[in-house]
Amino acid sequence: MNLKTRKRLSLLILLLGLPAYLIVAWVLLAWIDDTYGRPPFWAELLIVILLGFVWIMPFKKIFTGIGKGEE
Image (cartoon, rainbow, N blue to C red):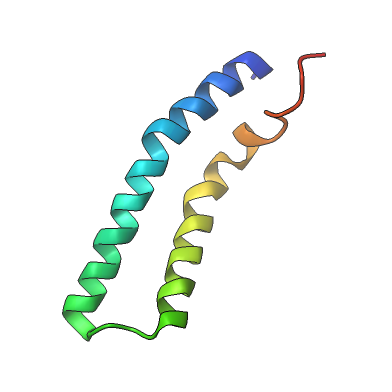
């Protein structure tokens, strides 16, 4: 995949995927809060960090080298 296509795809992922990730993380934490009670701060932080890795890992190849100029 060429750089121009990856740049466009990464912009699309950030504009649509990041808000979707935020909504999923918010709903998941609300569900955990309703079901089990509020977890400690460190557990909430761990859940959000894990969700962030799960969200970004499939797109790692697309985002690699986006900040570099076309050569």
